[in-house]
Image 1: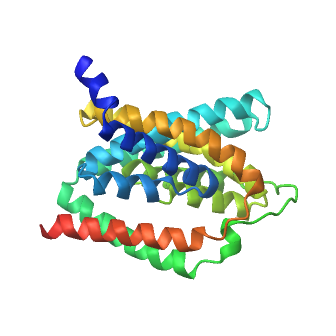
Image 2: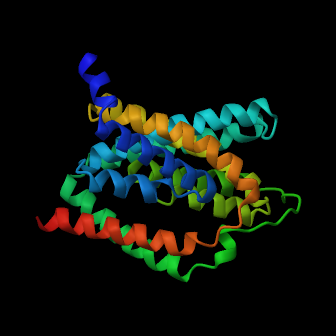
Image 3: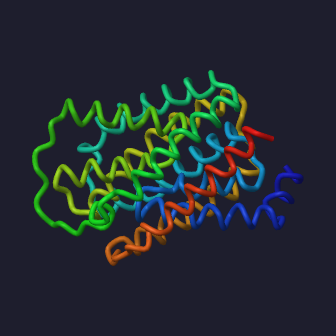
Length: 259
């Protein structure tokens, strides 16, 4: 325990704490915490399986902290979200299971393919999807379709994750929720998929608490900062930020594959 405390209070611990803050702010605002967290952790030399496990723990706990605030303020009805959270949790466990069946080399290959594809999607994406400010009353959601969507996004989130929050936000936007409401609902779904995946990784024995705790504490701080910023969001700069993050991660993954 003393060694862990020293590790948390070290320069490396401060760096991980800062990474957690920045990633969580981006996660709340744009559903893209993984775009920051995964490349940052990979760039400091953490293996990809351990990186995914830490990412799930940090995102899950930070999502829980915002979920509790939203429930307390009655911004979101928990009863409304429970079915989505349940299937997202099943998806998260399934994704984690598939990920642990793959070698680090295969994970890196899959990561590279997914990120290259998403890189071009981000470049071509409509900017208004990320910063929509519609305020219409939400349409009645097709329950079965919504559950299937949450399950499959949960699988991707549990196994790898970058962009899963953005996928959830985009889906809720298409159901005519405002951007603020879509971002808030995404925190509930992300909590379920991330925590369920994390427990699988934990029992699989690939969680490094020396890394997980400072990142998670930073993520909790960042999530609340992000919630304060979302109502004032006008940020088109994300269109420039995300491609840069993609490129850094792609370079790192290719480097790991070759060297």
